[in-house]
Each structure stands twice: as structure tokens, then as C-alpha cells.
Image (cartoon, rainbow, N blue to C red):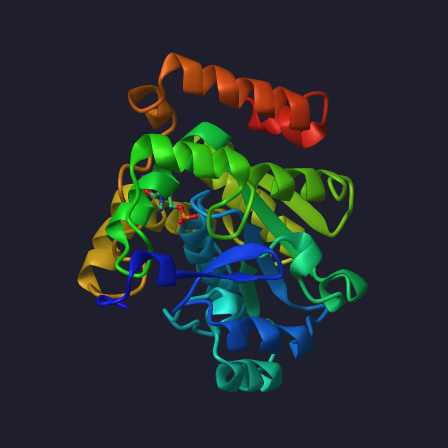
Length: 278
Ligand code: A3P
């Protein structure tokens, strides 16, 4: 991907942009036949919302509860080649099925089988900032300039589509007992509390000691350090700043207002909107 032209680094599938190399068209097509199971541990997020963080937490919770080890392999189902998907189809439960796909683009079995889904959210301003830096650090993605990326993000012309469209779609599933929404901000405030809630939601009971151990291993600095030890892995440039409110160092007053207006138009008065208030 290093020698690709910027416009070739993304491709469009069913109206949405995806990273060309990581999310090849054949992967997305094959997902049309990868069925979910009731026992799957499903994790969903819009990009740059704390996905890697929650993958780490979930793998640790699942290992503590089942003794099973989970590979460091990219967890996104859309990164799996058709051959890998065939392997996953035969894997024993529980499987970690993590994705950035829009809920309408996930296989219908995710809903039909009532697989439990953790959906992690981050306020849109910090999500945009994190996304912008990631675009410029990732060899597989086009480089971009701040004002340009701001406009693309507001239009949903970024990989995986519109933040607001994802949020509106999940808002409809807010009260579904098989869906649990959690925010980056809540997790920053009380990681142990978040881990307790997540383990209860999936029915993987943990001792208080296990909760504290996983929490200590899942701070920004602990995860960054452990990713550094396995350098070159897919997520080595994921750990940037890991803070709430970095948008204040990037947004102009006009951009902040534009985001507020869009947020109010799309999400004001909704339960998810109340959780995402920044
Ligand atoms: P920043 O770019 O603001 O630092 P994702 O994994 O969904 O791509 O999200 C990446 C964002 O989550 C990055 O935000 C990254 O630093 C942050 N992050 C990753 N691990 C974290 C952790 N353990 N605690 C807090 N933030 C974390």
C-alpha cells in the first residue's frame, strides 16, 4: 500500500468508503455469509472511539472467564479474508466478533441470534480529532489536511461513513436488552466500573481482584507499552494521546458551532445523544 495513490487507498462498497487493502471488497462480500451465534461476543464502534481499548478489555475478560487465549490478530471481521472467515465459522464459542460496520450492513444473524453487542461511543469532536491524526499516520489511508477532513467527516465522506448515521441507527436499538452502549468518557472516568458492567452484561463473572488486574492492564499507558513490545502490529499507531477534550486544541469556533448544530439536529433529545454530550 506504500506506493498506492491516495485515491486508491479507499474504495466504495454499497455507498460507503472503506480502506482498500485492509477491507478488500472480497472480505466485505464474504461477510454476507459469515453468521453470528448467540454466544458471540460482539463489539461495535465507529472508528477512533475506543475500539482497540475495548478489544483489549474483552479479550482479557474472556480469557479470565474461559481460559481461552485470543490472538493479537486484527479483530475487525471486515479485515478477515474470505479464507479466514471460513476458519472463524468453525471456531469454538465464544468468539470475539468486532466491527466498525454500520448496523444495517451487519449480517442479519447478529440481530436474529440475539448475540450480545457492546457498542462503544466517543463524543464526535474527539472522535474526529483522533480520526484526523490516524489518517495521517496510517500508511494504508490517504493523508489529509485538517479543514478538508473536517468537511469530509461532517459529510460522512470518510472510511466507514457518517458518525451521525451510525449514531442514529444505534439509537433505535438503545433499549434492546442485547445491546449495551458505553462511552469512552465513562471508561476514562471509571475503568473498573466499566469492566464490571461489561463482564456482567456478557455473563462472564469476574472476581474483584480480576477486575482490578484487567483495569490496571488496560490503562492508556499500560496498553501503549504492551503494544510497543509487539511493534509493527496493526495497532501500534493507535495510541496517540488517550484523553478527553483534545478537540479544544484543534477546532475553530466556527467548526465547533457547526458540529454542535449537526449534533443537535441529529441526536438532541435522544438517549444516545444524552450520553454523547461533550
Ligand atoms: P486519541 O487519538 O485521541 O489518542 P480506536 O481504537 O477506536 O481506533 O480509538 C483510538 C483512540 O483510543 C485513540 O485516541 C487512542 O489513543 C485511544 N486509546 C487506545 N487505548 C486506550 C486506552 N487504554 N485508554 C484510553 N484511550 C485509549
